[in-house]
Length: 140
Image (tube, rainbow, N blue to C red; front, side, top):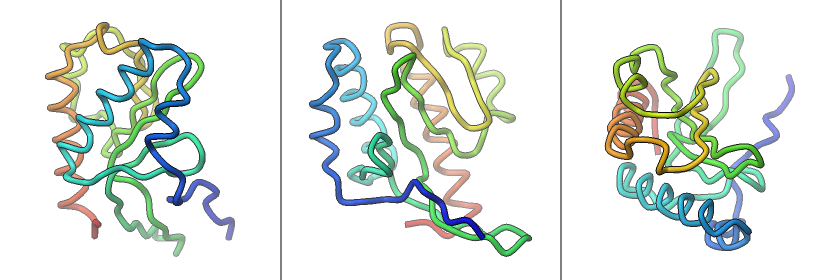
């Protein structure tokens, strides 16, 4: 069975944030970092070399594959900021309608900048997702 390549490691979150060139994007990522720390009560850790994750949960599939992944997190990407909403978006349609300019993937929320969205709606979505994950999985 293939092992997950992206794992929690000892790289420094502040170093990652300080290496962001664009001042606006850097500010947004620092703000997201504070939001996620406040919601999860976790300090944030690097997962791979470009994802900041908060807390973790243990999953096990029917196939027998199991592992650990972050409760929530984000990454500064070239095109946008990716936010990891691990519960997915099925139950957040009303929040997504109020959020502002964004795109979604399976459990990724893509935004260009915090001023494109309603940050209070984002906080509500992150908080609800983290609560759901804590209720469903063994978490750290």
